[in-house]
Image: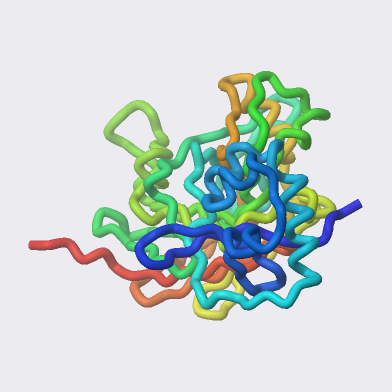
Length: 309
């Protein structure tokens, strides 16, 4: 049974980063809530940081759900704050060409699923930004593109995780916008044709947010609508049901290569509708709005990066 919805957010106040409980679209300071009721020492030690909560998710998730249930019945003032990136990921992994129609619009020829494995790349943690933060267009690229994705957050470490056990390792979900410099992901100066690091890890190229939604609050992660609009025009409109390799298969595959750790984020792929397939790209003054059903909306303005002469 799906648990009542709540989320965790981070926000800035008086020069510090604080944690918030999200009910509906209203943020409530977590430490203020905790001061009004009894919580364990384990939760007390972590309550001020979403990073700390996610990285010890198994120890705190039950008590956090109880705190959210208690808060729903209380008269609690909301705080006026724009969420930051909900937490700092340990690592950010991305799944490439994981929707058939997206692969087709990118002219990517895929092998049959039975003859292939997920294609996973890394994005730098330093490229992560949050709700309302600006995506900067670097002068090195003329073809910067968008990709709305479901971000799966790992909450329990594991190596060689079986597909049927993968769900137990998920803490929750965020929206990820995998911003990509299309003209830099391919190279002709080396015998290696693709350079995913160069094309996807510029500063500000990984908006994440708007908050972290626990896995128990989402009935089926493989039945969520994903949309992305540019300046109010819908560009992407798909569903996580369309994944080639589902999130559990991605977790199983990744965990054969390395130990997955709490705070890892897996951007699970994007549906069709990216700029490359349309022949249009981001420009100075654009506004991207990415939405994932059951999670929320992540909005980011786009500006040309100003480089000092």
